[in-house]
Length: 302
Image (cartoon, rainbow, N blue to C red; front, side, top):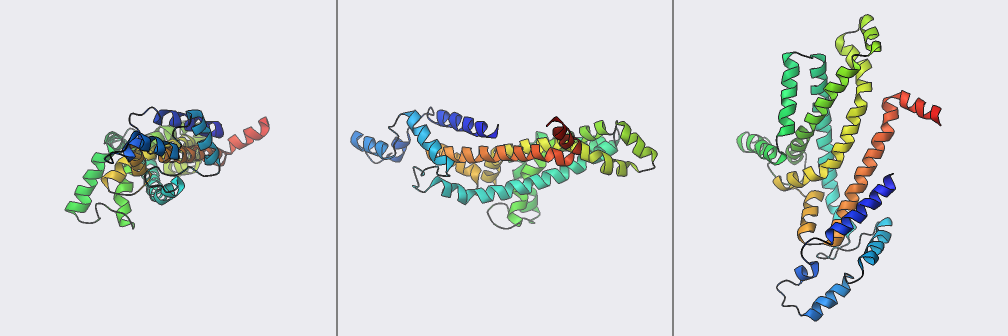
């Protein structure tokens, strides 16, 4: 199903960007007192006067071999524009996911083991605050505390771990709330099974039972939500990269939309969609590693 999903995304994106208000040719020639002949010449040069079906087929044929065309404004290959920005976004997204998983799993386990205590309620209150706070506000708050008041970390810019911590924490703290709530509910459900009672009867501590016998089975829905959250990171990085003045795919996408840069928009969205599809494909494959029963059942059905 991964291939038709990517093809479907390309069709939707190609269709939507061509109904947006404005004209890239007029945007390029704005302020140049261009004549209608110059407009037609530029449109033919950019091959925007071809039928939409022809434009789409040409784009898709090139995209299969990694050629997304050239940016209308910079005239650089789109793949180079993406290549310049993608490492920064991957660095930010990877660090944010690590923060989200570490904090989310820790809070969720603590709340599950100390179920119906003040610790449980405090952990879920922290999680609720994290999921409710907008990322732009959280980012500004972290800048105010750790950059302006304490002076521990730089507020904005690119390069080095010190400039990565605050933007990654802004995204990670938001996503950790969702993971924490899901870990708590999954672990509590697994702890009701009979084999957990058997483990307790053997004299294992509550933490030993939770970490050794419950956590692995409880991680399947958590792994699913992590894959979904990775797909949502592009929207989160648009805001965070703007607040912290970082380069990345988010800011590149905004610039491309504002400039009506059709090839760049298509390239950015398709690369993002491909990353989303591949991430969720890896999540599906990881299920059998987390729960061997799934692998054995698939073999039996085959």
